[in-house]
Image (cartoon, rainbow, N blue to C red):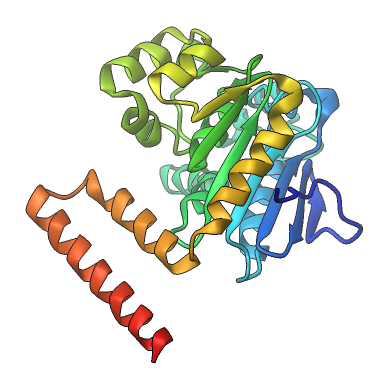
Length: 268
């Protein structure tokens, strides 16, 4: 069974509530602000972006986990005060920025949520407790989600007069469909772990004390297949929803041709 690293003496990133450790082909990104239920801040988003950029090329699997009882309880509400968080940008100040500056700032926030779906990686979120708002969107940023039985998801932005803007709307619709996604977002209700598994948000639900072992088992299974085959397959699946059937078949043929040629080169 693969061991998912949780602590390492020399993490590549360890600041603002984010720690990145690497053990061979497996990287682990850990949210470390357990006392605040891993509430997210702009500084945390910058650290998450840095973690994505710091990954060595040898990494195939990225595990996202969190310390404490909650995966992430969402945005740190101090961001909505005039002072902001420890001198960081206040959203009240941000609201008065020019359209261009506001767009650029939100785009920089989104970077923390975009790199998880790179074709050369498979990302796995191990979710326990609350995954609210930005926490829900961070879990959605990953390719796969393993949940403890106490996990619950909620998209509370609409209830606060906001919208989900951290890249979560597309994967949510792709996973559960437009109607259910609208209902989840517009009501802000909690989706418990059992429902999350039933509707496709969660790949697997396990007892809370089994979450680390189940995550390690999935990592081992993902590492068993040749890397290039996984990369090509992930690219095919990601392209499928945006292509018609004939275009997708052509994309499959091209990918298979590359794999066959690579395999032929290996056996020569």
